[in-house]
Length: 444
Image: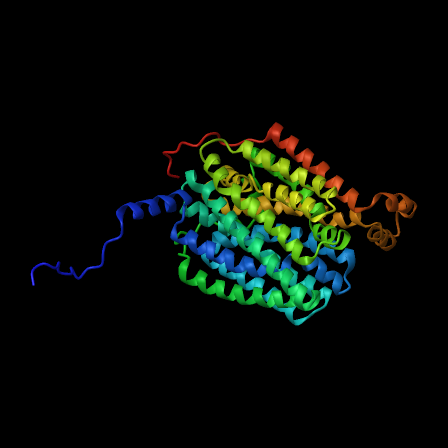
């Protein structure tokens, strides 16, 4: 037999051109092995978390907690985020980011278990002490991983890809949670969502253990807060001040957005999930283009633009009474993510080398301790009866109650939030700094 080619016994080699294109995409997005493992963890933990956490205000009201419990939850979220940021940075430097992330996952799982087993609103608050901490306490370790694995010319891209992937569970989670609530009711639906969160967090532990490479180098961990404050120099302080004002704008109405949409304007829980999906889809569309531009230019304009969107959201929400107007408001809410990864990358740029996790933790400690006051105060701006309870408890300010009753309202809450956003935007425009254009040939 002479006319037929003989099989070589070897599989055809991959197309070199296709392999080269894939390599360019991987390099462009900064998708190193540990980054890919981190993204898988973010999807698993985030999907479970957002199925449940997004509807906690409704769950608290269903359990009889009222507006005060919602304000307490939101204020505690910010306060714990602040308090956990510093030990999160310390643990990341001391244990390494891999071991730190595993520890933080276990804390969240313990909180989920409390909410599942004890269906009362005080138990939800106790459980939240553990599961609300995950994002804040893990952020220094996450940023340390990105900073260690990627060069400076790719840090904005790395943070942006992380932020983009975070939006996948943030978009899908509320949809699934809304379906569970619609089918099983508010109380059972939220509890089942927490069961799913517990299972997915357990799967995430396995992924972390197998795929995230441990950082071999142990960095000096700063456990003294007073000494850690020296890590926040003047340019970072100016960013911090403007960031605090912008977070006032975000957090004053944050926990009440779902109440405005569902309770006051008749949007169903599933429709609210759709609104959240619109928000996340908008954010996803802008992340990569902005990261590409920010890594090749100065970062300040991108941060300034995102502060403007923070300011605009409560104003547009205030005039939104229909689903489609709320959809526009949530598009704007998604656009406020325009420069958020750039802001985090700017913190990395301004933080001292070798101490970035500690600097991150200290930055967020200072920011969120202050912002927690605004988050808790949002309840008093929203509802006069909540303010009246505080006045009665303290036994002061009774003569102010008629004025408080006439002023406190959802409208006041949203307008005050926008005012803080405007102040933060102006401050950063006047005093904000960055490191200028980055040399693309740099590797660190």
